[in-house]
Amino acid sequence: MAERINRRNFIKKTLTATAVASAALSLEEKTLLAKPDNSSKSTDNKDVKLMSTGKIGNVEISRLICGGNLISGYAHSRDLIYVSPLLINYFTDEKIMETWSICEKNGINTSIIYAGDKRAVELFKRYKDESGGKMQWLSQTEPNSLNIEGAVDEALEYGASAVFLVGNLGDKWTFENRIDLIEKFVNYVKKQGVPAGVACHSIQTPIAVETAGIDVDFYMKTMHSDSYWSKRRPEQNKQVIDNTVDNYWDMTPQQTIEFMGEVKKPWIAYKVLAAGAIHPKDGFKYAFENGADFACVGMFDWQIEEDVVLAERIIKQFEKRKRPWRG
Image (tube, rainbow, N blue to C red; front, side, top):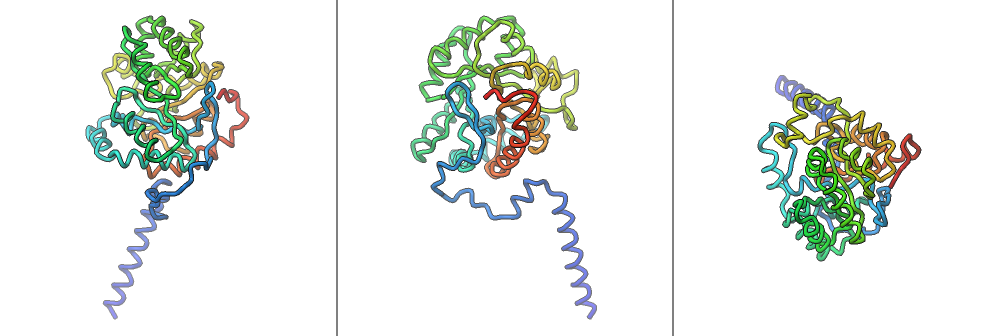
């Protein structure tokens, strides 16, 4: 009898502990535990459109865009030195192609890839050839000031649908007062018949580009609240500008909202989850409610389906908002 009672108490305590642990899980973790992983199963679902889209130039783009930093191993890891090696080991060629496939099945039709990562661009070509997928990519491009044309041409040879200046360089040329180089880049890209963009972390970059009257087709600007525990300290801002810390997020979120609210060009927000510090339901709401037309998000394969559901639900809530949808 005592043995049965002890066993019953053990089972009761175990079930209670499991329930408590489950309550503490994130929405992503609960979703992962609640159903089997069928992500690797092949289904003919290429024409499913689950995600809202907008346009930049003549390119139709899903409002949620698959970021490329995780795939290339460029992780913003704060003080965690193992994060980049972990991502490099996790994202094998097969896992990257699986990730793109899951994106397509859930209505994400666009990925951003760093043009300087030859493995990524070659793998994307292989993915298209082998899967017959319709995924497109926007090229994050980092040209040398003496050879802007060559960097753009290389991205287009790999089939990029649009080309934009990488954020570090957009900020650097702005701080060095070389807006002429940004204009040269934008004009050359546009001459090739594809949309031209400028990315940045500092709000001073789009301010400078707009002031100069450069006919950019879209911006990529960091966008997230600063209400999270590991947010950047004020004394780190100069280190960000000097390119000496791994912390490239939004320095001035309220100023971003105010200035970008008046910009009449499509805006892709990035770093919207502050490298995993902000839950998607909060990061997506902050970005889309405050004016972003698209959100670029680095996603693991097991996060994609839930992120699409959350993003689409939030987008529908803000069909009418203070800043009109520009894309």
